[in-house]
Length: 414
Image (cartoon, rainbow, N blue to C red; front, side, top):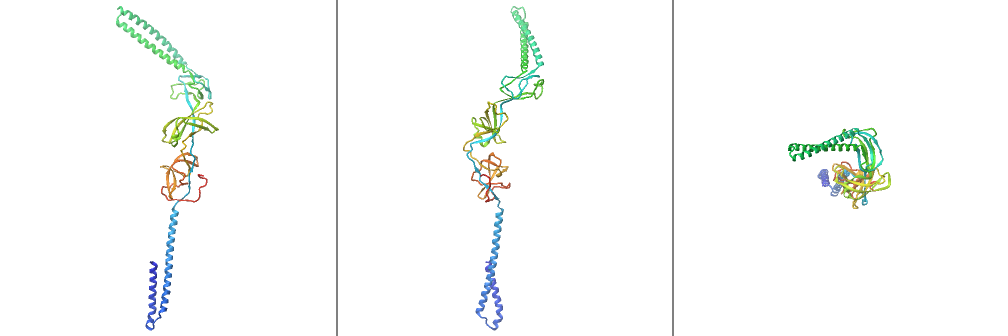
């Protein structure tokens, strides 16, 4: 429309100029018709050329603006590099770290006061239940026991006299030789003497028990792991808030291993299941264990299930406190994928991974199985066909339009 108006304006101006130029001649002579038409066609051609130049100039500016806008929009779209998760084979077992513990581990304290007279076993010694470990001298307890025994003999003598008196008065009351009141008093005195004798006997038994604590015996079969006393040490059994530990014993013929199992594998932790133990110090060697109990509760802080694995240790090859790897069988249908650690996003909503769907980024929550350092195992949330964004920006949000670079990711997920 603009070009048409420009052409009409050019033609109108050309006609006006021709009329102006031919006006004087009309008075003298008549212009020839063919020459006038040629001039009109020439001017019309010039006008059309001018209109074409204007049209194509405006059109080129519009196309340049469109191209610039398109290039700006494309430059604003972030370019991301993606990798497809590596699909793992059906998981047959999981390997979890653990620490061995003695099946029974206990400190041994003294139950009487005195001085250590002698000890018989040092650290590393294998002892059997009931074997004598040490002796304590308790002169004060010995003297108290002698006094208690003397008091007990006195109480028994008084009891015997009271019994004889009571029997005599009960016999005499039948003939009226003594009063009923005196007889009741003799019977009551007999009961009091019996109670006193019982108290003396109990005191003797208490002191004899304390005296028996002079000899310290092994409470079970095991090994001495600590000896914290020596000959002549003062043994203070109950006066201090923290009594002195004489020995520390551990039963290592069977060991316990406590292992935290990730929540996703909790169904595989069934009581009675077998487990294999491996140690770095014994490469290529395995130890057979058995899952004997679980806590039946998921720890809210670590999202793990605590289990106990018992392993026989007849040759004492395994030591308490050793770092071991526990191999547990898991269901065959459990599948996982592996992605680079750099693809993970740590948000307050939890662990997330960015994937590209319909040319837009989408953040999906995932659950981690095992952490291999540079890569992690994803047990839920991803499929092998999902294009995962590598090194996503911290500002990445779901719905952001992205473009995928054609450059392949090297050495990742292959």
